[in-house]
Amino acid sequence: MLGFTALLSGCSLPSFQQANSGIRVTTNPGSVVFMDDQQVGTTPYENKKLNPGEISLRLVPQATAGGALATWEGKLRLTPGIQTIIDRDFAETLAQSSGYSLSFDRIGGKEAAMSIISTPDAAGVKVDGNSQGFTPVVLDSVGEGEHRILLTAPGYEDKLVTAKATNGHRLVVTVQLSQLPQPTASASATTPGLPVLGQTSPTPKASPEPKTTPAVSLPPKPYIQVLNTPTGWLRVRTDPSSAATEAAKVNPGQAFPFKDTSADGNWYQIEYKPGDFGWVSAQYAKKVE
Image 1 (cartoon, rainbow, N blue to C red):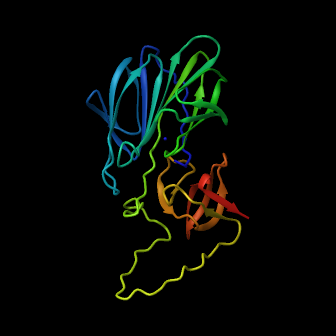
Image 2: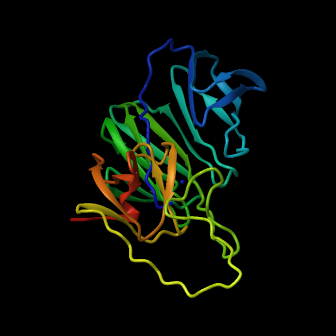
């Protein structure tokens, strides 16, 4: 699931009765949860008393000011004693939506294993910074504990999943990457309802006059300068994660006061307008000192 990085919540083996299965569902924005065509609640949703076996899950996003968002549905196989984690980030189309699921298969033995599947197929995979080839990936031996799993594909958002592997189990990671919108000359890449900083609506004139490009006013160093992006703009997030809420968009060439760097070094915090702070991906921004 683009040139931004998504830090997703971790997963570990829950403790509940071995005869039962569990599920935990989180979405952005919130959604109504249907299980086997029955409405069971809203996100965040958790249930640790489900029967093992296959279920159908449908997530209907709640209304937002930005317009209708695409519903997601799929089938899950619940395993006794295991809680399956589902997370979805809704968009106007399924192709632009993203999400992941985390679960475990019992394999016995004293080591932990991992399998990674993605949509689209053949996404590049790095585990803890080490390249592991392209999806689908099966790792027969990984260390027990937390791992950082990065998936990348041309034309899609990057996803960074953080999850815990447990000895005697195979961690199963299934990820859908978000497809980048393709900008066109006749349409703005602006998402309705979200401000694009530095853009104003042109004022019609009866007799257009030659215009000069004003010099860019740079803030005091250190500052963050936005680089070129595939879309022609860069999202500003409320937190250093592509799963975080989108606060605004900024344009290549713009510069903003630098405030902080995320712990993993993948995000910069900027003051994108006076008194308002947000995070941009370090892949499409540079720090000028």
